[in-house]
Each structure stands twice: as C-alpha cells, then as structure tokens.
Image (cartoon, one colour):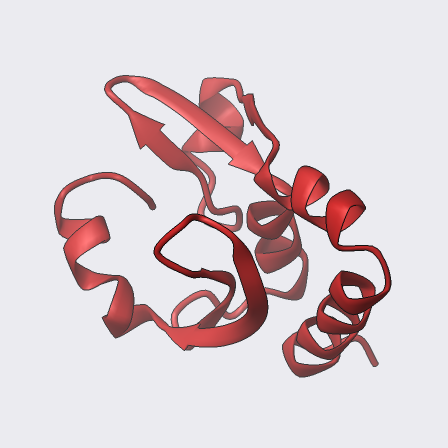
Length: 102
C-alpha cells in the first residue's frame, strides 16, 4: 500500500540519486482551475486570487488524510531542498491563517 511514509522515503531516495531533477520537479507549480483549487482533496498555494499546485499538493491529495499530516519539502535558509518529511497540519497554522495555502 502506498502510504505517506513510503512516499517520503522514496522522495528522499530520489533526491539523493538526482537532486537537480527532483528539485526542479518539486519546485514547479502550475496555475489550476477554480474547481481544482476549491476541492477538499488537493493542496494549493494561493497568491491573491490565483491558485497554484505542484507535485507535492497532488501527492497529498492522492494519499488523503490532509487533516492529519502532509508531505512537505524542507528547505534551508538559501532555499535549497534538504529532504522531505511529514508535517502536522498544525505546523501550517500561520500559512493557513494567512490564506497562503489550503
């Protein structure tokens, strides 16, 4: 069964194998339609009234249970992707409150 934990494990392995590819893939976002942005299953980032989604938002939607935890990329102060992990929804509190992510 594909779990969030297994996805995190495989993403970290892929990052070790080809950092350039994985960083480009994970850091790419696309504008999504209102129906996608307003769905309860998928994670989007909001900039004003424009919603963007990327690979991690799609993966989080596919494995569900957004109320418990989410797959996230962890970055250093220079914006370099360090690793992937699971984060609790509570840790997203400031971003959720500011309307930056749903």
